Length: 363
Image (cartoon, rainbow, N blue to C red; front, side, top):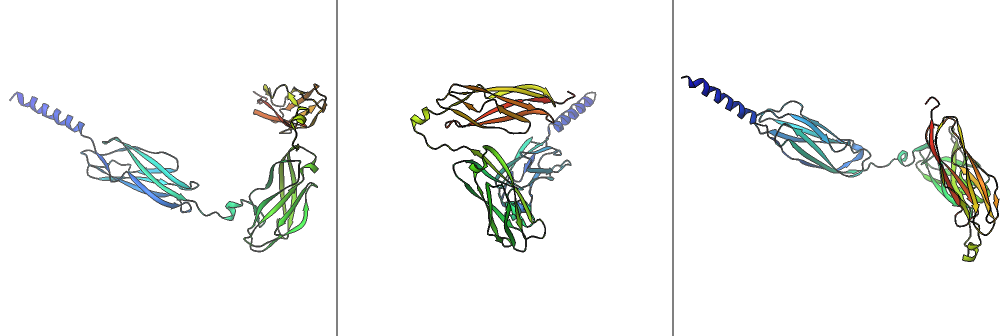
């Protein structure tokens, strides 16, 4: 009889240890789902992954993590009792994600197995583009892709014509006036002149780079006029990067040509205070056999000024290019460029770089 309490205690401990060793068993009906083709414009889609607790104690989902922000997981938050079922919901947002997708959802729980990876896949069909998608810039009833017409990189060899799409988003015809306001070296024509509702046309820009008498990046303001009662004035910028044209040259001619050489291509001014100015010089040398002409120097912002002391260099002659950077209303890292344009046929454009950091006045 004295041994009975000890036996009961041993039995209780054995049963307790057995209970502690018991774990829930999580079983998903499926671990993969194919959405197939889904239209982008219909918005998010979702699928429920069902699971069952086939163990002896409750299942607790600790974490569900998707492989990307495009997939939002939801799951059963409360413990799932033995024999009961729960769910993990995978929601996929197709907005701006055309094409195939293949994503994973990782489920962590107290069950066996402790980690389960679910998979979803499908193909997003892009939504049909509307005029506002193709031509996001609107002025009155006229839509264009941009507020600027970029001609791109051109040379002084000959005029360049480039067409830019335009669309009538209104319900009545839009008639372009033949009168335009442009610089003398830019001509603009709308075709057709009368643009019917939902009709696409073009604005043809003819650029005369030699007549502009300037090299490098150029931006000019133009105006077009229509018969619309409101917003009849259409204002745009025309941009181009102009380089000098050099006709083909023989080997002998190239050997006699000017050559531009700069002592360094960059300058790091370190740290300066906001509002301060720094000055530096670059040495330009003509290493060729004929006269070198520095056509123009151009900085990429008004905060930087560049001036060569001489523009015409005999063979072997050098000059200084004075560069001043003004840090007024500038802060943080700076990266400024100065382009040198010359009559060196093999390398007519040289680019110099100024870098550094501008500290706030109170730093």
